[in-house]
Image 1 (cartoon, helix red, strand yellow):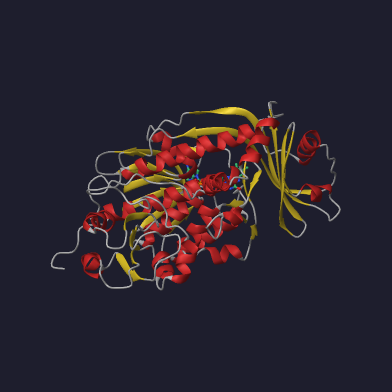
Image 2 (spheres, rainbow, N blue to C red):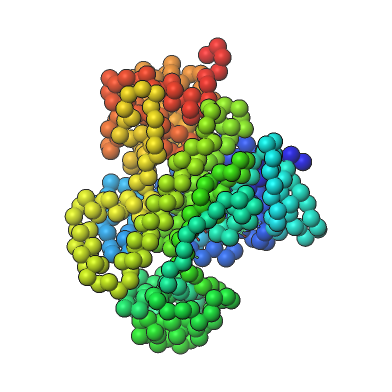
Length: 491
Ligand SMILES: Cc1cc2nc3c(=O)[nH]c(=O)nc-3n(C[C@H](O)[C@H](O)[C@H](O)COP(=O)(O)OP(=O)(O)OC[C@H]3O[C@@H](n4cnc5c(N)ncnc54)[C@H](O)[C@@H]3O)c2cc1C
């Protein structure tokens, strides 16, 4: 059978992309080698960017019931002051990523995603017309054909390798363990809750529920005792003793893994009909929750573009903007997390200076948006004149806007593009009429933090075009065509 889009990997990024495609009405197949999506997902932090995306798509309520707001944000564990930022979620939200993946899988199924578990992709080839994907399944080998294939299959991506996409980068001498433990109320790990640095490395303890903690250790400049296999309890206890000087005995290990400080970035995010997203495209130390937010931003960036292409309404070159917009974002995440790891190293004087600098409001805001994943600006080329300062950015104060603009939350959870008319009159109604099915026109009083009278938002929430009061709307037609295709004939 011939499919429009096949996604490899039902991790958070593959599932998010699948949901985006279904919202746009595109059929999609997801092939996942595991028997349960996200069963082994190691992460626990969601940063502002992820919370905003989940909020936009109406997914945050399910997560909120199973996690908690961790009312801080940090740059290399140097605490920032999130209360000074304009956003509603400038801090981290803690939830086991396995639960996030569970909710994404439920959403995907409810939207009609064809989610196939126990299907390991072993070979991918493409020609000008299609992609052929060979899969090992419990009932034997199969081949599926599709118009496009997206590798969301993690850091060791088979898809990326098969597409011949290089993954340059390196590993630095910093490694550690991550584990879930059941502990008693008297465990000395209780005193280590939060993230702490020591001359030898760091220890982070996150409560995960009654009597359960997630423990992360990291050591600089020493070889790991082993590189393969999961660390056992004794190895983890040794590691905490070496780093923090805290001896803890007891505790029951529920799950554990090793991690290494590897930073790599795909040379290109597209090779013909094949794309890569998430950890398949970029991997770095997951500080500040930036790993997941960079991956989910890939998914929402690519979803509407693939749907537009398959729906025959994509302007020329739209699919290539996935690379031009997201590759720099991946590069930046790699660079800024490396910088943070350098600061975690016991170069205490440098840490002290940065800790002093973050007291300046502008530094606090700059770093807060960086680690929140909310400062990305895509290059926007207006069809004449200068781009508005908001163009290419996310709408500031997304959560507040969703509450105050009637219809915005609904439009976002349906994955629509939105033309916001903040003038209070109907001056933009005619412009959008030809694209009516794909663009929702909403009227509202001016929004705080939004210095414009009219804003066109792409389905991923990015500003495609904006104009001040009385400003020139000449670029709106071109922006609408780029977002929603040429207006229907006769409208
Ligand atoms: C120890 C640790 C802690 C972390 N903590 C955080 C955190 O707190 N916050 C944060 O933002 N990020 C964190 N991360 C990073 C985060 O886990 C990743 O960025 C995120 O999981 C990437 O999602 P993904 O969907 O791209 O890939 P993955 O989650 O790796 O999912 C890939 C999926 O593809 C499947 N797959 C692989 N190969 C094939 C194949 N050949 N055929 C079919 N299916 C295949 C896999 O089974 C898997 O389900 C952490 C990472 C580690 C290692």
